[in-house]
Length: 450
Ligand code: SF4
Image 1 (cartoon, rainbow, N blue to C red):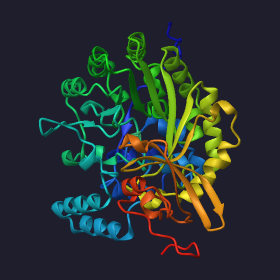
Image 2 (tube, rainbow, N blue to C red):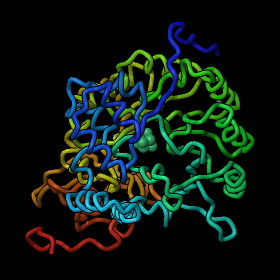
Image 3 (cartoon, rainbow, N blue to C red):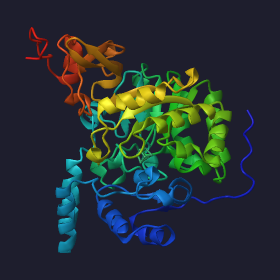
């Protein structure tokens, strides 16, 4: 299939900015001294990185500080607890660098760097030794974290993989090369699907990405290669004018020509990310390779927690020929308290947006919690004579027998995650054990939980 023509006009160069360049950013964009200080303070704990495209094309500076894209990439007051902010500020004021480093370590440890049992439950082993940079949670799918892909074109303040970016080797998943992955796949023919993820694999030069992808094509049992990426949103020029943009598209064509499904799992959080001409052209070029683009993002308080944002986003995805796939619930990690959305509101936002969609965009599932036992979707809220319940379903499960099973939990206006819910009394024992680690409490004659 021929590649679509790139833009003949400009060749933007990728340039990223971090905390050290915050003064330079403030000279070009309207940041207040207080916002600059906030970035300096919070970015000692949580990663901060933006690039020229994000700054110039995505952030609406007339709407700062309330602009959703600004909140998505610039650290804000409130992302750390008042106690942790104070601890960090005092450590800084002491002038003792070791005290600051200790405070940063202590605060990061409190931010649940690897949610949903990723470190304890998902890292596979060969002959008793853990395989670095792999996760194997669901029978048919392995996640692969190439070490050179463990950064992104910009960082999302809500990132559930923030621990990948803070320079602490103990907090990081990373595989130096594909050798152990290939060995593991040879021993696990049940794995049909490899998700190459990060960070963002598209941060790698094409020559490097090829070193990770091509060996997969020699493994017959691998039928789908997925690439998790936010590059179309944060740096669409990766597929347009970067010097190896055409090469990466040829690599995609090669994966497709091998008979594999190439699924580009594109992360779009806000409709503005799809409103730019480069983003739409990048998607068109990716699709011209034969890759299928699936779109997913979490529901984030203060960023995209309204139905109009999601309705516009899903319609824009469909118009670009991509498949709306998942609305996730934000995970309990990093600045979770700042961004979390109660499940009751999440279900309402999803339903309100979903009912505006044409049928072809109703491929989207949500709101979905990617939790320790598996992916749990909130299908709706049920009114009964015994009270209100969330209708839940296991979309995916560590234990295959649980996949597709519906169950219920007591409705709550405040619960934002599965473990804050109370299982309905009739919840099957295996689901209650997998999800809550215990049997449901019995109902009394009045329908109340004992
Ligand atoms: S693009 Fe993905 S991995 Fe990178 S910072 Fe954003 S959420 Fe995290």
